[in-house]
Image: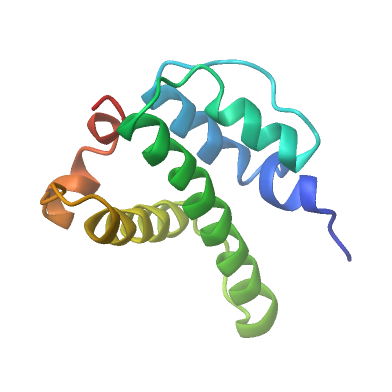
Amino acid sequence: MEEDTEHLFFHCSKVIPLWWESLSWVNYVGPFPQNPKQHFLQHIHGVTQGVRRDRWRRWWLALTWSIWQQRNKIIFSDDTFDANKIMDDASFLLWTWLRNLEKDFNISYNHWSSNLRSGFVY
């Protein structure tokens, strides 16, 4: 069964709770657009400039990439869907990027992954 991009990344009943959880970190609510570009733009809409906005954009990329990786494991390695694994993978990926992109970012992964919400309220 082929899946379209919109369903796979944003509207599947298994992944939409991941997006809702993420949006709760910044107290943002609203419907999700069907189009991936519009989803990204809505995701960053209203987020202030600077570090917070940059992290939030990167989170969208990290979560989307982690969903894609999980999909591939399901298809090619007979893995099962694991929402917690997706969030852990996305969290680690973003943490890795931030360690390399933000010169003052020195938060340990253990602290980062235990306090994701605070990472976007910066």
